[in-house]
Length: 483
Picture (tube, one colour):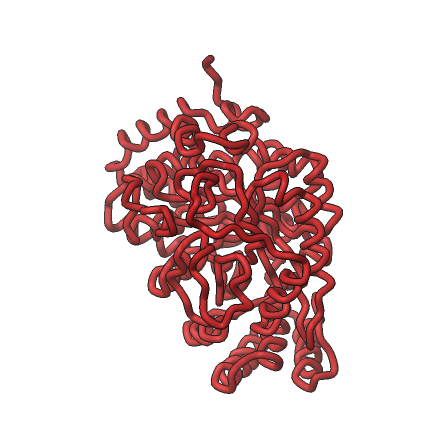
C-alpha cells in the first residue's frame, strides 16, 4: 500500500513517510554543493538568536538535510557557530545533570543491537525489589542527583506498569539526609493510552522512547520478535502519550543502525509531526550511538558515524529544533561530550551506571550493563569539569513542578523568558550540591561561579531573592527554593 506524506496524520507511515525521506535525500544530494542556497537556509535561522521576537517556522527537514549533506568548510563552520549561539540564546550556559536508573533487564523482545534481548542466555537477569530501588536511590542522592531517568526492559510479566508505578512511588518518597529525587523521567516500551494516563497520574517528568531507526524495513529486521516488532505501534507512541496528557515527550534514534542521513530526516520529521498535531515539539532529543555490550559488537552494523559527523548532527538538531533539550549520555567519551556541549547539548548524565543495581556496588559491575560506559568519571568530577569550562551545572526540576510543561514550557522557551527562571534556579540547585556533596576543590570553584553568575540575573528583584535563597542554602537553613 502506498502512503502519502502528511505531518498532521496520526499514521506512522504518513508522518514518517519513506518516499518523502528518499525524495528529501535526493533533493539534498542535488543541492548540497549550492553554497549560496545553504547560506540562505542558515539565514532563516537568524531570528532564533532573538527568541523574544516572534519568528516564523523552523527550517524544514528537507532544508536541514541539505545542510547535513553539504561539505563546504565555510557552511559547516557557520553551522557550528550558529548552533552554539542558538543554544546560548535558549538555554544559556546551563547544563542539566541526571542519572539513569536501571530497574530490570528482563525483556521479551529480540532486538539485535541490545544485550537484553530474549535469546541472550549469558546475561544475568535481575529485577530490583522496592528495597533495592530505595538503596539505589539513596546512593544516587548521596552523589547529589535530583533527577533520574528510569529504564526497564519490556516484559509484561516481570515489568508490568504496576511495577513501574511502584518504583516511581518508592523513588519519590525516599528521602535521605538532604537528598530528594524531584523528577522521574521514564524510558519504557510503547504502551496504551490508559497506561500513559497512569504514568501521568504518578507525576512522570518526560516520557522518553527512542525510535532506534526510522527506516521501517530495517526496523522490522532489527526487531524480529516481540511486541517491539510492531513498527507503527512503536512510532505512534508519542501521540498516545500526548493523548493521555503527557505533554513532555523525548525522541531519539540509535545512530549506527541505519544511514545517519535517513535517521536525521526521520527525527526532524517526527518533531515536525508533534508540532503540527499537538502544538508541542519534543521536550528532549537524545543522540545515542551504538556501543559495545555483552553479546553486541557494533562492527556488525555498517552505519557507524565519525565524531565529526556526530558533532554536525548535534549542531543541526540544535538549529532545526532550537527549543528542544538535547541529551548526551556517558556512552560518549569526555572529549566527545566536551565538543557536543559547544554545539547544542543541554543535558548530560554523570556518574552513570547502566547495570541493574549498579549504584550500590563499590566496584562498577559490568555483567548486566546495557552498554559500555565511556565516561566513567564521578559526578563530582563531571561537575568540576563543567565549572572549568564555564558551564553552570544545574539540578533544576522547577518547570515540571511549577506546571511549566508542554505548550506552557514552549511558550516560555520560544520567547526567551525561560532564562528568567532557569538561570537563578540553576544557581540555587548548584548551591545545594556545593553545600551537601561537593569536594572542597569543586565547592571553591562552584561558589565563585555562583557569585559571577548571580550578577548576570536580569531582574533586580529576582537577583536579590536568589541571593537570599542561596545564603539560606549555604547556612543550612533552607532547601528547594525555585522560581
